[in-house]
Amino acid sequence: MADIVSVAESRRAESVGREIVVQGWVRTRRDSKAGFSFIELNDGSCFGNVQIIAEASLPNYESEIKRLAPGACASVAGLVKASPGKGQATEIQAASIVVHGLADAEAYPLQKKGHSFEFLRTIAHLRPRTNTFGAVARVRNRVCNSIHQYFQEQGFIYVHTPIITTSDCEGAGAMFQVTSLDPAKNAEGGKGIDFSNDFFGRPAFLTVSGQLEAETFACALSKTYTFGPTFRAENSNTPRHLAEFWMIEPEVAFCDLWGDMDLAEGLLKRIFRDVLEHCPEDMEFFNQRIDKTVIETLRHIIDSEFLRVSYSDAVEILQKSGRKFEFPTAWGNDLQSEHERFLTEEHFRRPVILYDYPRQIKPFYMRVNDDGRTVRAMDVLVPKVGEIIGGSQREERLELLEQRMKEQGLDPAHYWWYLDLRRFGAVPHSGFGLGLERVIQFITGMANIRDVIPFPRSPGNAEF
Image (cartoon, rainbow, N blue to C red; front, top):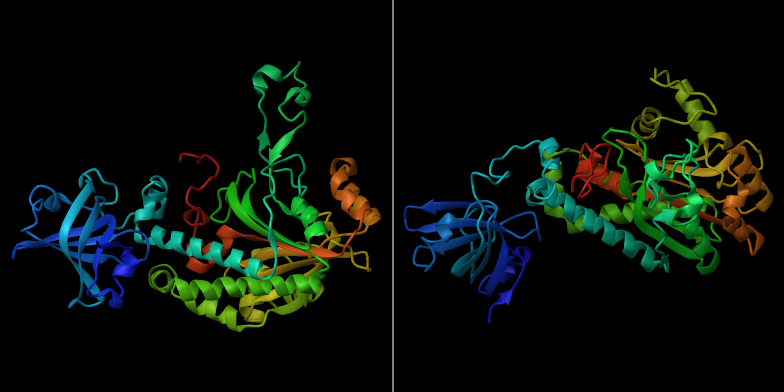
């Protein structure tokens, strides 16, 4: 009995001589006057298609095979042969073809080539069948696999933190509210909703980060990480923002800021190495069609030692650069993308990790330095995007943590469980956050972040 194999396996030279079955979707079909058809089949396992030779002698040749058009689905049984054609090692001589589903060539949205990415977002259910979005999906899968392997190999525990929360990790306030109440029926005299009658008995939101909950497990299991969806209710339509996205957030006990930097550098290098090794066809496509520098950029980062530079030194470099920036630089201001890119692309020409930021521009949970003016924060900067990872050593001193909360207008009573970690066996610990879509956008060179997530959620868009 013939083995069912992937298109990727059928395209390997070592498969020549095997009787196999491949299953997938038709990309093209062209008929020869000599009495046979060439069919290009793809199942998503790799970038390239496998060529099928379908002879007119097949019993369903006229009734079904000659009706195959892009989008149709079929199973092909046959012999793998060495291909005389250029750019392909094998082809399959079909012994039988089972047509599972035809596609109307006139109605199929992907019949024509050259569709814009904007149009393809309107048919997100079909865009994985295109070269670009199939490649994005495989790279995304490889990145996720690499992330889990990186942490698992170092003894980290994978923790599932809640999607529904009553605390705001960032203090930003841009959160989606979760309620089972009908706001129109529960507002009393214009005073708003009485959340004591709500499902959770208090206001609840979709999480912006799993960090605080991950810290609770790090303070018991030492090394943990989260990897899940997070949400921001910012009304932003930029190519770099999503309302729903995935975050990787490790938390490590007995780890200072320098150990945090090493962990972040190691993670990025592992991801980039694995993508180049395991997705060569996909990366070559992105390098040719999307951004001709993506492979070179990834190799440069892999081969570079990430430079550690203090925020104060970075501000001084920017001020002395002679460059006129859109946003002026001054100590105490947050750095913008133009500043970060200047540092990593032009001044240092390699990845940079900035550290020790002013306390007033960073969240309450970051450890205050002895100078009282700065906190143990760090941002990893890479070419083209600037910041790709943000993290810090966490504040483990109870009194200072309570003080920082009050500085930022947060009620410590709402974070009683987080403060308990400092009351009962406080431990120095650190962590960071890496946005999955941001790193995939960087790897592939895709210009819009909505094109590196299967079903983008943004203002006015929740169709699928």
